[in-house]
Image (cartoon, helix red, strand yellow):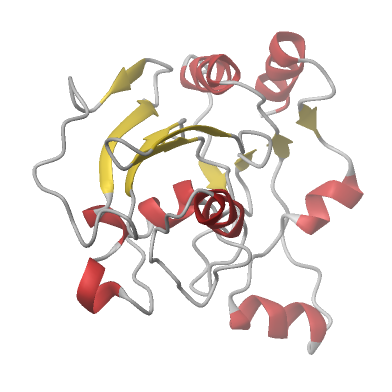
Length: 214
């Protein structure tokens, strides 16, 4: 495992591959109540990840996964968004974490087609604020609204307060650019044409996810 971490540091730099105890401790749990109880009530020292990768571009994600995939070691990878999961989905003990927090841009808001293009680490609350400024909304309000990232919502097929009317998050996704485990980058659809328009055109927004996770 140490050799993989060294290769990642050589490829990405010390600023993007973090191995300090203080940082690793922060990534030892998400909001899963069982882990919180073990840490804060039972005073357990939770198992930590081996390293945390903080990519700043799609190329960083691709390079990291390529290095890990080519390693002779079996290396679990956990992608970390807002850490708001209450089921342990972000629990990264014994793995390498890829933290998407720096891939957080709202890249484009297309009001003509009702499409917003964002990166995987963009927080839902920030995307919603940007949409509200131009008179739009995703109409997706889960309990984790203030913490969840768009990539995390899609990965967990999130539902929210308005889902019975507007659908779950997967009903809003038009296209995904993803990084496969071998580092290959690909779009899941060849075009971004929606099958139909959901809701009133001035109050809802279809989603294009343009960033990557494993």
